[in-house]
Length: 449
DNA sequence: TCATCTAGCACCTTTGAAATGT
DNA sequence: AACATTTCAAAGGTGCTAGATG
Image 1: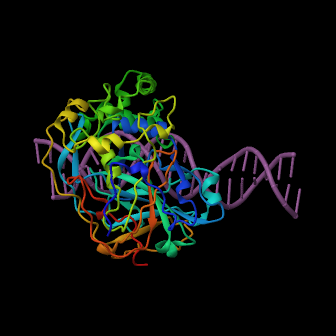
Image 2 (image 1 turned 90 degrees about the vertical axis):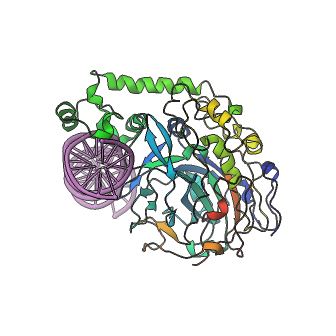
Image 3 (image 1 turned 30 degrees about the vertical axis):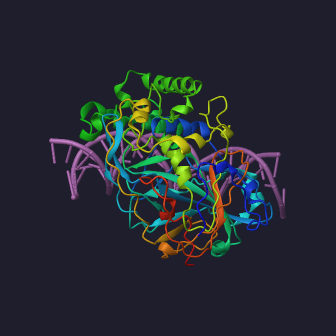
């Protein structure tokens, strides 16, 4: 195994010509609905997970370009834990509640259009709206299984392959977006998230249109709310007539105002530091502020040791908070400085970014390994034959060879690519000990097809 | 006692087949 | 006959809440 590259200079990475007959590095991925994602991200995105499965909102939707029009690709999504903690919502803020639950079998959602030519994927934004999240560990529907009260981040995989079964020998690239980090919950904790979702999700229209939900009105007046919810939520009906509408309008205004005043990035917490939302700012007690951790996460996204060589490339050279005026200018963000300078548990930085942060819990060991089990969650409408979850042991066999990253991608997604089939390699060490190591995650478990 | 989870509810949008029009 | 548009019912998604669970 070769020495790990200098993580502090990720942008210098260049694709490996020997591994890429085609310019894989030209693939550009952008996140759709960036404005919406940013709104949620600033508050602390929560995703409801239910036993029967719940869609994501905002939904994962990406725009892809730079693919070879006639080559076939698969689009996949998986979810990785952001850290090794379980959280709880306490007094309008998130705080660490303890060590994370043991890792669940990793499932990868395969877009139902897969495989499809590059032209198909580039024709219009790729939506993963059918993707569902569940907390049912025995789920048989192929939903993505997550733990409640944990933080996750979706990763988008683009694999050049003719079918699912040749994926193992294919080169694929992985993209992720800091704004898509979320906390999985079984019931909304932050009422701002509830309001934001109701206001933006068409399926929740019934909850925002005044006077149409008599059931709730009746309950609101005649019954006491759930103990757990009472202090967390305020029913729309409890407000003055029309107040709800105004509230949403106000929220919009607030967001516009905030985004028009980008938070200084150099603080290390460009997204969570919001005067107006600071009391709700997610990860209040997170060992690391989201963005700072994101910076580290990018660094973590180095597949570790198992790669003979790898290269990590940050999409852009600089980083700054996108504004409403230019929400999609992804190039404006990069974390080189964060990578190089941000200490993992710097109380000073925390206090600067989150005045209401409680003391950090002691560092916990990195997330547990996925237990060598993987599942390709196929949409029922998928071209790949619908079948029960496919589990395969890969564990330490999860070898991945080389990280080849786009050299000058305009998107700001984290990206890396590597052939899927490589020899077994030991798990890597990491410069940031308390942070999850990518080598422990099923970067792409196709070892045992 | 508390935090979290579950199931069922009413309301809504989406979807797709059938009917109708051009 | 072929295609486009409209209609409508079923399927499915939504947050809310009481009660269950640990």
